[in-house]
Image (cartoon, rainbow, N blue to C red; front, side, top):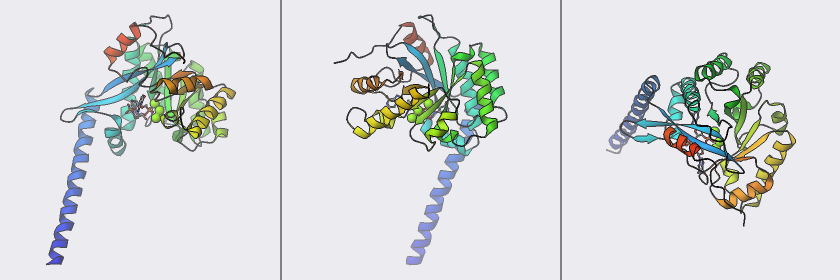
Length: 284
Ligand code: C2E
Ligand code: MG
Ligand code: MG
Ligand code: MG
């Protein structure tokens, strides 16, 4: 009797496993199709200078899923990873983001740069330089409007060939950003050799800068180091005026977060740009 119940439980468990594997395969198929048919979409989030001027916009991928509504990257990037679709997804985002950037208004005389996250199509890939170059050529935007964001973990222990690929693009004006800085394992010594012009302080350190002494210490150390190495420093996930003031106090160069704007669809982003600088909270 107990044995039979046990057996039943096992087959129930494996049924659930099969169902979830099925769902995964199904989702992967849908994602493949979405990629092939322009079924993904990009939202753009401004990165602003101390005066509220939009300097850059980060492209963040979304999937308007037929039955599940708008899916955030967390919900489908692992599926892309699993299904070996990450390179193709990055390619699509790169092309689409640069093309979109070519339509942005230039109200202040200085065109806004576009930042693209790369996790599949990364330096070291034999196709990397060509893929970026083709996307730039296709869009017609200037090289120096392109920022490529790579996570710290992708940047540990770079072979020489990989650095050379980065150097080729940097020589044309492309900038590289180390994303989520502080969460990976790359040593400061490595960072010194890296052709990355921008350091993005991860949200988890930004959130505590106003009240957690160790978060404040990390943020200040990263900014000091960035400055000493001649890099520019962006804080991500800035949600409150207090965070902004503290970060400004330690010398952060640019700010990204809900305090200024959520990531918004392309049309809305063009409207944001047309309005001019974003509101910056006053000190005090
Ligand atoms: P990330 O590159 O660090 O992007 C910043 C994330 O923080 C975004 O989440 C953004 O919506 C969110 N964020 C921005 N400001 C605030 C804020 O003030 N408060 C809070 N709580 N969150 C804020 P999102 O769009 O869900 O993207 C998550 C991650 O997925 C990204 O982290 C990036 O690693 C990855 N990702 C997004 N789009 C792409 C893409 O097109 N290609 C690749 N390869 N990865 C992407
Ligand atoms: Mg990013
Ligand atoms: Mg980040
Ligand atoms: Mg982050």
